[in-house]
Length: 241
Image 1: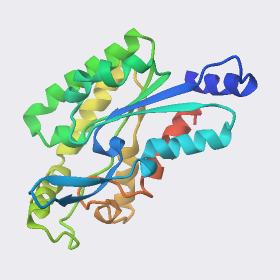
Image 2: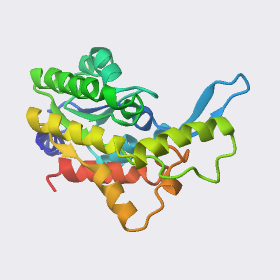
Image 3: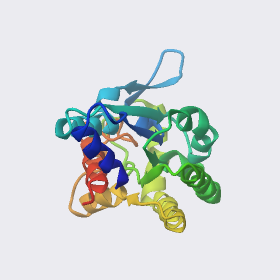
């Protein structure tokens, strides 16, 4: 990808090139959310650990390989967001930073809106891609992780269990699959490359991996080690693998 030319050129001439800026537009997984709990006032809260988010791991990889290159990471992930909401804040949270590369990842919260929302999801992704292309910004769409396939025995709070039942039904019933297939169609029509991590998760499930146990909240947030999968797959795509 073109972004890697920036790393190469900057590594050769530290004084002649600006830092490389990569923005990540997404939901709670992008934001860096992990475990979930309810506060005393009844509000749902998540554990925020940005150093264990996949973009932090990707920066770790890039700075290890290119120690002389300054990498600016724009964390434009907001918990609970859909692609529609991501488009609404695209100018504020992404465009004003003039990124060299934008990684877009939505789908988990979108499918939670039900099957009738899928066209809104597709239209919103298309608008995001069109806006980024209008500024000639290199873009990757990354498919998210799987959600829980069962209600974990580790979940004790009944309110969290209710959430887990809904996400399990959306996962096992194929709704998330339908959303991401639609996303792939949008990417194809806009010529946006897809880093298809969801298919990696599906392959793991076929090979006997307990998906639910790989989620920090046993619902939809990958645990800290599983965030490395996103980082490695993104680097492979950026590097031309």
